[in-house]
Image (cartoon, rainbow, N blue to C red; front, side, top):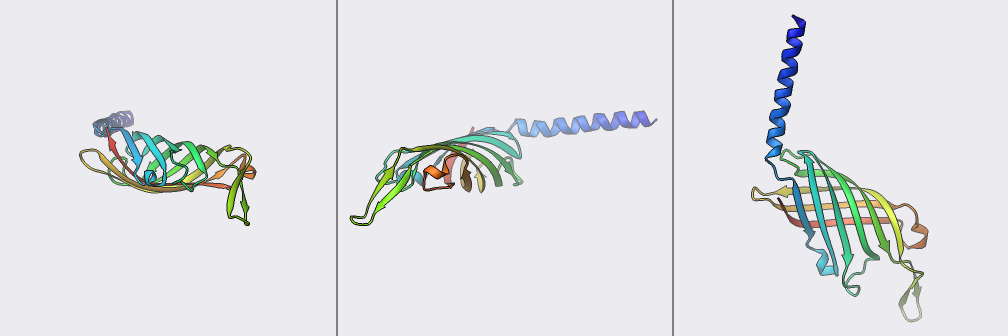
Length: 179
């Protein structure tokens, strides 16, 4: 008799799990976003995110500076993969926490000349890898448009002594589309 109850319970759990999967199969799982504030500072960032399930996703963002005169940041370019965990009630949206890695190119150490207020870069650009954590929020409309705000900090792991920085920062005000 106990075996019958066990078999019924196992079959019921399989049907419940399949029903939950059907809900998420109808959802769109790809996102393409851009950081809309960075072009004002002479830089550009684009992000692709793949939603794994209703509470997590993987993504990668690419950042580059296209106008060095406008950009006062020492970061030249970066590629940053990340994993996100969502805490909202809707499918892959709401408040999230992320862990990220970042392969980046950063200007070398700066030398400041106080006589004529000029700045010189000592050495070449430094390529380094960082790991970090971030927080943010994402809102998705029914038609698939995305609004996202995030911030994160990471630590340079290998060449921090060759630059003026020991941390990297990510800030985003993204607009995009889920498809």
